[in-house]
Image (cartoon, rainbow, N blue to C red; front, side):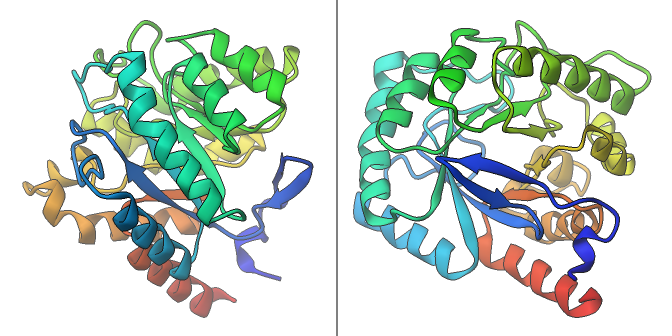
Length: 283
């Protein structure tokens, strides 16, 4: 039995009638189609290059791909609905055709984009606003009976205000407890939680979540972590996002020991190495 589940019961979500298990950590590769992204965007990458990139992701162990066309860095502004759609949907169609078995997550806060993406074969909606930006997105998720990634964020702020609390993990748990119940009342049961590293939080608040990460398992849901090359890493190291791979891998190494379910990453091969060394040490 893989040690990853020695302390916690294996979790799963229903994706189009099939169970997707988290008895081992999953790797989610990032395809970012926004020109305003803080690190490595694919906005000007050809479709052929995107397919090559995803093929490399899959060869290096990624079972999930997260595609987004909006930057969520602090103070970033959303593009128009038409612009987001034009960036996202053609790529989604191509990826779905070329990789019919890979799990595709769509990073959007808009219900219209979410619905069109699901019609084109997307599997999961990853809404970093927690449905605060567009509450209709929950109706879409419920209607299509798809999994939903619920991110901790602040109401009326995708990423423009800071959380004010002396106890970050307590606030995050309070938020999730309340929101999970709200989702279940409208028929959304396949929920993945994301503590929202970098979203409306000071650097130390992000590290407070890492310190008490294990407490998130109280919620008994799969947990997604997205810390890849974020400012909490490179600002702490007085570096840049381009030079933050080592710091990212260090934190991934710790969080795999805390039973993170999904690692959303830019560097799939390096995350695979973290996973391989963890398995070799504890299998």
